[in-house]
Image (tube, rainbow, N blue to C red; front, side, top):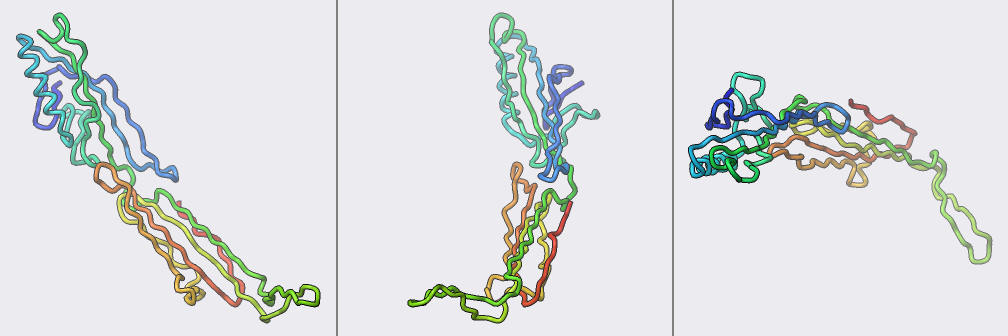
Length: 239
């Protein structure tokens, strides 16, 4: 079989796999996000003399100094299509070789190199992480009192209101694969605390990148509520 890298073709049967490793990149919620393929390869150059070997070696070093090329054995499952990989095929280990001694480096030379490619596994918009919290603060609607320290009498609690407010907060974050993430709407739009001027906060974070390609987007939100009557809700759950 003949190994190719971009437009360069190695001599037939001169390159072989030393190791193939495949790992799944998981999202925070345990869902599959990407498939990472790593190849470690070794090859052998044959030449007429040391000058010929060094010329071939210099050409290889130059070729593998440029990433983003399709690579592998065409027509077999062992082929990394550059256009399908996130950010293209990466050269993680440039051309390396051992000691040049004796016949090694004169009539032949063994060398090695490594490639890596990440492929999308999750569909666009799939949730990778979701969390939300609802919290409620109140005084059971009881009258509001203030602490007083009279000059010539014991401390007292003075009632200043016949009742009290019920407060609530809804906050969370959403992380999805490859496209901008949505945010949850307010649970109690009729109770938004508009008097504060900060009833709604929505934050769009810059995405996590893989070789210049956005792979994860996170959006955060927070709502403040106020009501004259009790209200309650459990947070949203998104798997």
